[in-house]
Image 1 (cartoon, rainbow, N blue to C red):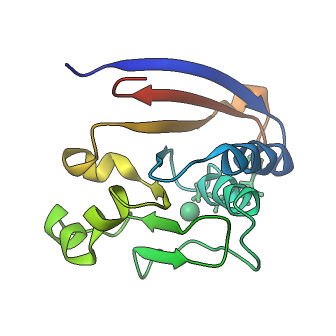
Image 2: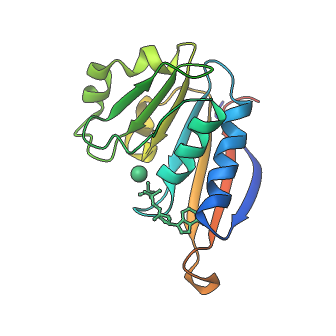
Length: 151
Ligand code: ADP
Ligand code: MG
């Protein structure tokens, strides 16, 4: 049975706070963990991801792999598989990339725009939704963390 548990909602007021939240999640991430990142263009998915990379002790910059879909970082505490599936044509393209090896491997997966590939996500993953609320200012973000699958 599909299960979904809301873990927490965090509000951030600048990019540094979003990056710091990502860093905490990166520090706590274990092998085989999959994170999905949902939110509109420019909401802060890549900022969050850069924090996760710091938390995984990955040296050097992590940018959006929009044109490659998958960027692999091997030099951190655990392998880091950073997907940006914004330009994915169909889920078969994901399979060709070898997403299954990443999803069910010993590294940490993070998938920007994961709502585009819902059908092929593993049963268990942590979903992070980032939203703006312009009434609260241009830099305000509400970040909701939900555990999908059994806890
Ligand atoms: P996405 O990957 O979702 O398209 P980016 O992370 O590339 O978005 O860009 C987010 C932009 O929003 C950056 O320019 C960042 O400086 C800005 N920003 C402003 N406030 C915040 C915040 N609270 N959290 C994250 N990013 C923010
Ligand atoms: Mg991005």
